[in-house]
Length: 554
Image (cartoon, rainbow, N blue to C red; front, side, top):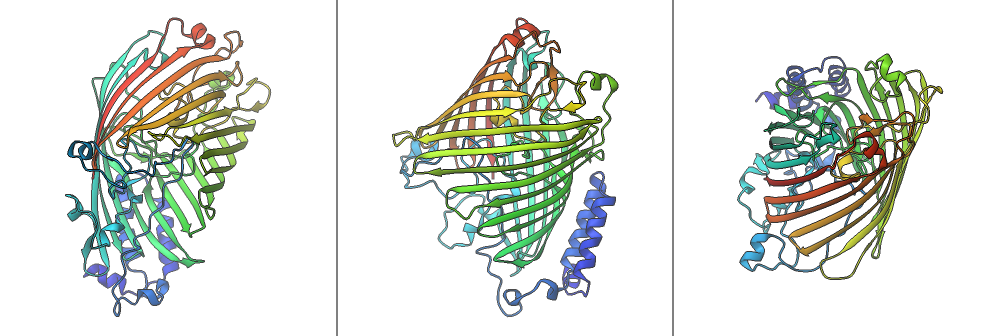
């Protein structure tokens, strides 16, 4: 009754939107205020005057709303070193194979057949459930629950367990190993009023057990909110819908080299702020202002008031099989940098105004796969002028053979700094990336001060088994700068440059078993063969990694 009253209210859309944005800018800090904003947005947005957004299609008093194409979702972008699925029949899960159920194509499932997926839970589409002849599933009753003609409610979630064994973990000088367990639970609720208004809430509980070394920031977060936001439709423009999103939200763009949800992490990555997004059949355009969340394992997370992240991201997708990204990103980082770190050139973790412009082209033609992305950075950090860049390039081929083999040859580069005392800072800042995906699963190398000559092969021994093998040869871009890990932290350096530039050679193998629609098992092994740089700086270390993961989602 209360919601209906607000829906039929006579409030100004413009004034209500401005009020919610003001709350986001001035009041959001901590879960209590986020929840307050969330509840406020619920009432405010539900109370927007029907006439402000309505056109003929929303005359619900006369015509029932058509849910077959609603609510809208954002399709996941193609990452680098992507692969193309085989268009052949077969057994698409272990249970299909055991039961002798051969299919022409995989069964309908919004989730990918993988234990890892960076796509946020709010961007999976279950619209196929509106078709009367859809495939049945045990969890269908908790999806797309119609509350009358105009409201839609869904529930979902996931659980994973991962065992990790790290030898000479994190290249530590004491050569200590790390043998531990990770558990993660996620549950969400999603409420829509037609395609005009949305409330989405997702909790996360991430735990780490049996650690031999101190936990990383991405290992633990006890019962917190991963996503908590409200959407309102601003209108329909040029065959596309425009929305405003306010609250805590995951971000994922393009290749994920600069902005990713970081699904390998037990905690994932999330932000808090305001985003507008407009999607048409040929073009997407997003603009956002957010702050990254600071993980506090035993308390409710707060946003980082010292960092403001602003972006404008456009994607052109009119040509089948091709995608072009153009973007501008601005990071204002007011965290303090110590005088000692400034003297040592370790200045990437604060006191900066950083601008990033970039472009990406990725696609496939016939059996060829290709990608090229360039990123340039300028601005100021610790009173030093910034001029840095990164390049990612690759070409691949899908062999027309059984098991769908595909391979890539790639080169990745990110600039480093020659001299911390010359008034310039030339080290690239990787921002908020999915570095684990690009620079080896050992996570010892990030997109900063690095050359990476790499190759990948992938295949499907059975349609339900996915195998991936990678090889990386790493060199420092400048041997006087740091080796930066996947988190962007400089942790090993020889300021004289006498230790050389060869970091090492890494091999990575992973196998994903798609057991059934809701179940996946992932096994992996990685080994870093150290080069002259690490041999001189960490004598005797010989790191490797084994992991086994089970994932369930619904």
